[in-house]
Length: 240
Image (cartoon, rainbow, N blue to C red):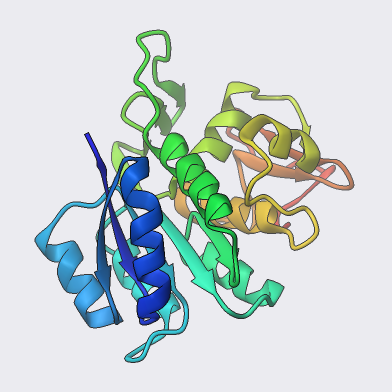
């Protein structure tokens, strides 16, 4: 069955090219030229992923990304003609799953889109029971994170990062090890995208993100998931 993709971009030539490229590769594509019509399309139909341009005629893509995230965890791949690292960080902070600067090779977009979909739609496994750490539950089959039984919203990439660390509770992982384990696409140790995701996870699951109980930073090394209920130790710093 074809996967349903929404492209929100006012560049008709680009979106037509992408639709023509993706269609024979197993995707059903809808195109919208602005943020308002893109949001309307999301209200009317279910999509497997959204390709969202930052520069839109009625509003910027960051605001559209925020509005999407307020009501949906659909994977979002953002596009921009600006290659500034700050834009990439902002996109990740507000909930984008990946970020691709223009101009780009459609093969790279296809690869990134496929990676995002794999991360957010993995096959359920009976051998992956929920991980429970006191008030925190990570349901790997349903891809849900619960605190005190209440769902906390994470992007697909953030869920995978939290799960990776939780499955290796007590073991410190460097940024390079995280990138290798989860796939290097979209992870950039230079622009600190991993750190941005960690910050977002803490905001979602920690009582006090500045003094994390679960997801801790080990100075000069990387991150460790601590199942202990106490505060951060002396070797940790709360902010990445």
